[in-house]
Image (cartoon, rainbow, N blue to C red):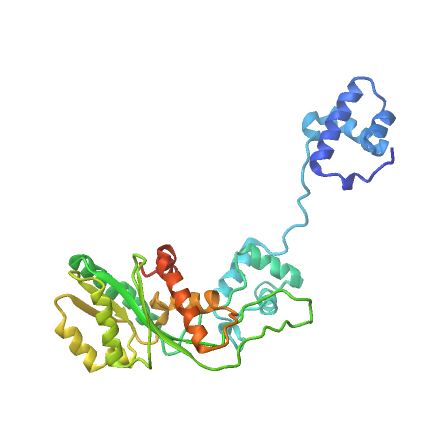
Length: 338
């Protein structure tokens, strides 16, 4: 039998060979015979026998090589991780995003050590830092205002909903364009793929309302939403729950904060209440996730050519979301507004 390099065998196979070699040696087989039987060098068999005589069976068990010692100490890794919690601008870079090249530089700055680019990538994986597309947030949006709303206003709204036994909705509007969002696809390196989409312009404005329980109401608007159109939608929401009280949470868009809307709320205050989110805080509205799911998943790279066809496809996908209560509930979990 042709002798093979022991490195071609798995740890499990080699361990089995070692135990069998010792058994055969005890039965009187010679080293050369055992080596020929397993297709290994006689020197390997001799080492197995010697190791067994010195240390017993435990020396025959497989052990994995520990590999080289980590280049960074736990203290140094902790220092790098702390730096990555900050926007990159706080460490002298001109934008807030962290790239492998920037992490490479921050490692050198914090530890005085240089990592190979591939090891920087491994370090990021080890630390649980994945490549992600950041969420956009308006510069005007003060994080303290959003935190204050979640800490003080949101508990009051939930308490009132419980006291009233009301149905709670988050409301929002968005434009949906006939020109689709394109995702990513696989293609040969250096050959950018082409996806044909309509060159026609147009789209629709859609208003939706979702509840933590998984309900969803929607309406495709005939024109731009103003105070009158918004009041009509609020009436539609209230009309879906005869005999029950309704609470709506929405942003402070002009159509939502208009005097006519305030008057409508006052006239219906016995069974309807309206609360506003802080300015520039779309991340606090779970209804934003409806648009994210619709545009980036349901309608991604669609091949519709005309506005008439698009309306049919849009309705179909809105109904699909509406029928999935677990999906709608997940919009609330993601944004921690539960």
